[in-house]
Length: 540
Image (cartoon, rainbow, N blue to C red; front, side):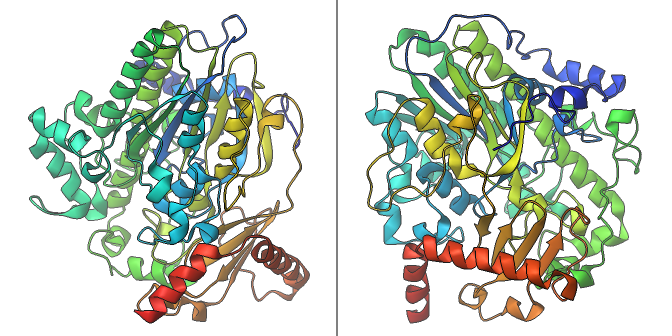
């Protein structure tokens, strides 16, 4: 991998171009929790490093301050980025929650796991060795706060956990906690924006939250994480903490405090310029150019994502987009609180801090909302995610890596950084360690990577992307999306992925090369679990 540590693409240079108006707004958000000593001189660590995995659900890679986004306010993530290494082109293994998270925590591809869609199950998931299990066996205290969304043995190895979801932490979940605090009704109003129930759904699943700031799922995750950090001084063991925020995943119910930072009354030049939020460049792309499932949503064939209404009233889009930004800013605020606790307890120097997400969100691109997991796995907005890794005086600072990497590479990377050998398991590890790059060395540069869903596998290279329809009929109740045809984009000339060039003869050789890469991927990575699912589905 090529380091661009002092290139003109560093986060520091980008941030100097942001406006004074945005800086003032950011300071207001960060005041209570902004870490001040990320660059302070401290002694070298004498024991295994703590590992703090800060994780969000559905965070589009570009919706972050240090990427020079025209609107999004993230002072604490910007600061974290300056203190460590940014991977500009980090992709998830599947643009859906469960498969992506399972890959992250096991180091295995979804096809090997047999998890290409959230409901999938296979025998492989009971044969894996989770990251937290390896760390626990190596003397770590392991904890998880927030939504985990794991299955089988991948969810073993926690010393302590508190999930947002009842079934993941029965008797000790956020849902039960919020009821004890007397705010279940306010939470149910938020939850109903997408899922219905006691309150009606909301157009585009978006409404302003009525919860107090200290009662949101994000506040819950942060509070539990800070408790663990404060208690660590009483323990000799290093810790591994998976601090998992539910947002900016829908329902898009932002707090008014953070929503007020974004003017969504009209389209403007962007919050960074002291104006209303900027219109996404591809918001008005014709639905006729989109895959069938995305086109269906544009036609209103969904009980919540009423894009047919939004096409007639773009205020619905503006409200959704601003709410998404506000949820990102709320997460950023809580990350500031967590980082401040690390510093105050003297743990910053010996803690590896990671920020990433399981997949992205359209946030208005292609005129879309959410991720449309029911029938595509190709667009940059849903497959590329933020990835920051930081540890003072050990991991390279202000380093920007633009090579292709995969989120599940964190599995071997964190173990190597902790000087722990990979476990000997039945299915091995598919992921590649990035430790050499993080500590000033180089790693082998990949020609391609593959993100694979039940509906579509996408081959990604430095400049091109090929989306190959698979066999979705087993999952899509008889509907065959393959009739739409494969998808090919020249990302260098068309970064917005508007022009599908699959039928352009000028790209025939490049497409043949990418198909060859996919065939190589299929040969190398056995579809152990995937084949089991397909057999079971056909028999039912």
